[in-house]
Image (cartoon, rainbow, N blue to C red; front, side, top):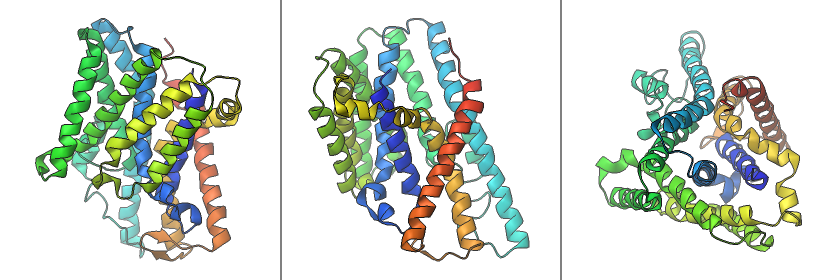
Length: 351
C-alpha cells in the first residue's frame, strides 16, 4: 500500500470541502481554494494508478470482470445512496419550509436539476454523465464507476492494453477540443471525458512507474507536489483554459515520483504520518458527506443566525470565520470516521 499517496487523498478531499464552504476567510479567498474543483482530476489520476497497480494482469475472465465490478459497486454505491437519501430529504424540508416559514431556497424543491429524472439517474449511477444533481460531488463517482468497467473489459479482452488506454486519452482530448470550439452536442460528454482522460493517464503512469527506478530522493516528489499546488492556484476558470488537460499530467508525475520515493527521508515520513494516512482512508466519506454538512450549515447561518451573504459568500468576522471553518472540517472528519467504520466497511468485499 502506498501510504504517502493516501495522504494526498485526504489533503485534496479537504480542499474540496473548503472549496464548497464559501466563508469570507483568507483560506477561501486563496486562489488554491477558489480553483479547488480541479483536484477532482487528481482523484481520477490516482484511481487509475492504484487500480492498475492492484489489478493489472489479474482480470482475465468474465467472472473476474464481474467480481472486480462488484467490489467497485460495494465500495461506492452504499454511501452514494445514503447521501442521495439525505438530499431527497433536504428537498422535502424545502417544501415544508416554503409552506410554513419565510425560507426562500436558491433552487425550488424538486425542480431545476434536482428533479425526478435526475433522481432516477442518481439511483442508477448515470447522473454524472450529463451534469450535477442532488449531492453535487457525486457526479465524479458516477463517471468513475463506469470507467472502472471500461478498464476491466479492456484488461479482460485485449492484449495491447496500453494502446487502448492511449486511444481513450486521445478520444477525451478530441471531445474537449470540439466542445471548446462550439460543438454543443458534446457538452454533456465533457464530464465522463474528464474522468476517462485522467483515469487512463493514471493507468499509463503506473506502467511508467513499473519501468523506472525506485528509491529516489524526496526532491522530485516534493517539487512536483508543490508544482501541482501552484498550477491549481493559477488555473483560474479552468473549465475554459484547458487546465483540466494539463493538470492530470502534472498530477501523474507527482504520483509516480512519490510512489518511487525512498522510505527513509523526512518527506516520506511526513506523508506516511498515521493521522494523514487516516485522513486518506476516510477521504471518500469526506468527499461524499461534506456537501450536506455545508448545505445545512449555510442555511442555518442565513436563516437562523441571520449571517450576511455577499456573492454567495457568508460574511463572518475574521476570527469567527476561521473558527467556523475549523468546526465544519472537524464535523466532516468525525462523520466520515463514523461512516467508514460503522457503515462503509459493512459493504466492502474482502475477497
